Image 1 (cartoon, rainbow, N blue to C red):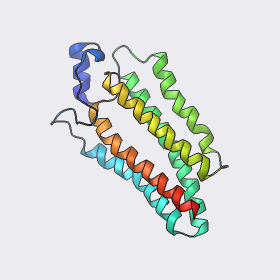
Image 2: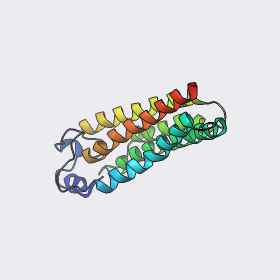
Image 3: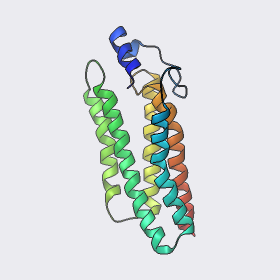
Length: 176
C-alpha cells in the first residue's frame, strides 16, 4: 500500500468509497514504481534461467532446475498470499476472517509443492494455475476497492506473464 493510499483511507474512511483507476494503469504520476518493477523482474530472472537450463542443459542440470522451479514457484505462491494479508491488515477496520482465509489458502495450496516428490507434469501446471487465479482475484479485489493499489497490479501483471512463460518453456523443455 502506498503512502497515497494511506492518505486516501484517512480522508475517506472506508476504502470502498475511494475512486480507483483501472489496475493496468499506475495510480498517479508521482507514484514511484521503478524499484518495485525492478525487484519484480529480478524475481522472475531465476525462473527464466532455470527454464532455459531445462531446455538446453544436461539431464542432471535439468532435474535440479525442475526441483528448483517447483520450490521457487511454491515460494512465490506463499509470497502472493502474504501480499494479500499485507493489504488486509492495512485496512482501517483491520483484517477480516475472509481476508485471513484468502491469505491462508495460497499457503495451503503451496505446501504440497514443497515436497521433494512429483515433477513437472503436475507441479508446474498447479503453480501456473494458482498464480493465475491469485492474479485474477487480486484484479477483482482492486477493481472493487479492497485490493492492492493499482501501481502494484501494473507491476504484477507483467511479472505473472513472465512467470507463466518460464513454466511453459520448462514444461516444453522437459518433454524433449
